Length: 509
Image 1 (cartoon, rainbow, N blue to C red):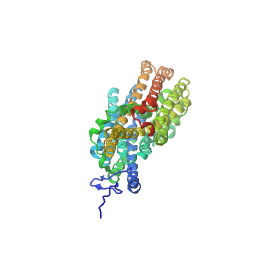
Image 2 (image 1 turned 60 degrees about the vertical axis):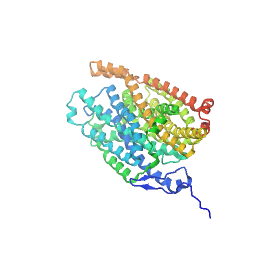
Image 3 (image 1 turned 45 degrees about the horizontal axis):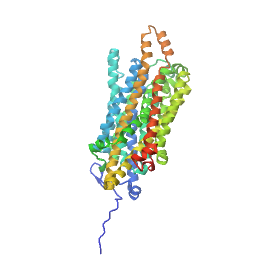
């Protein structure tokens, strides 16, 4: 009788101490249905919860800055843009080391650590910002202290890359688009939640009539305290319920080798246009609305006071659209979806410019809601492109060099996870650029307001210069044209795309 060896993939997982999973093959149908789907879904749920809080803390200062004057800490428009841009910049910078942290510590332990770090900006906002000590300092000291406190909120921005890189290992290729889109959307929703909840929280206990006044008391400490219980729960849930996958413990070589691919840099640039737009506008839109349409907000105190100028609606729309972009990309190709998104964002940016010039809040706001919709869908489509592109690059290299297919596929899967972190960092930096461009556009009117001798003259100068944002919008319009061209040139122009990666056109890119 001849002995046979069973070489089929495992249908159960082997766990070691610390909830490490040694045997993980989600692309095997039997394993996925019997074991993988349940474990992956559980980890996705708790990853979304922690990432949601990370985004909430990251963009918390987008709402805090519009309440600083009511807290006795008035800042100029240029200074407030720095207070929102700094956490954006720090968060972008942290995304690279956060992605390295998953291979080093494992997805489970790093989720515990990264969630716990959110306590720092929450406590600083609750204790330092509303303190009598800060109120008694000079304006310059106040600004630098506020900037330091705001900078710590950047730790929330790093969570995205570690979460996405971790979850990418749990799901099979055929389901990655929707899973990554859902993970990202759940995190992105933290932007909408914080911009809706915080304006309400900081006026708890105030009479309705007082809250609707242009100047009224606020409780900024509540803006930090409200998140602390949820952060503790997120860290505990990650510790008790999440897992780490052994083969996700790639080393720095995966990141270094991914840098040699031109696809890494092209996708990172495209992600500036999609995610950079989403996060940059999420940070900046409340400030832009407040300083572009003051008459509209004065006529609608409920919107101005309780809804922070409706800025949260855009973040909500963009978050919900993200998994749709991934789902649509699974069916018609990520490059096609991405190209349509960039073209649409350019068209509606032009309409937003018309809205500013016509002093039409409705046209401006509706245009930006569509921009958020398209940027959210583009977030999903660009991230869906990354694993497909690197999967095809791996297959091509294995065929050309006669390499073992499974080992080569794993190598390129690790590189794809690295690119997710790299693109996430560069894309988030695009959000900082958006705020920096808005700030530069505001400098002229800010200087004129500062030079005006009386309050009445300051208000008149501000009203006369309420179209200050159009120069920034023209820059964004030009950028979307460039992004659309790059998408077409590298991934849809058949003579070029097929020559670089022969099977790319048939792989859902």
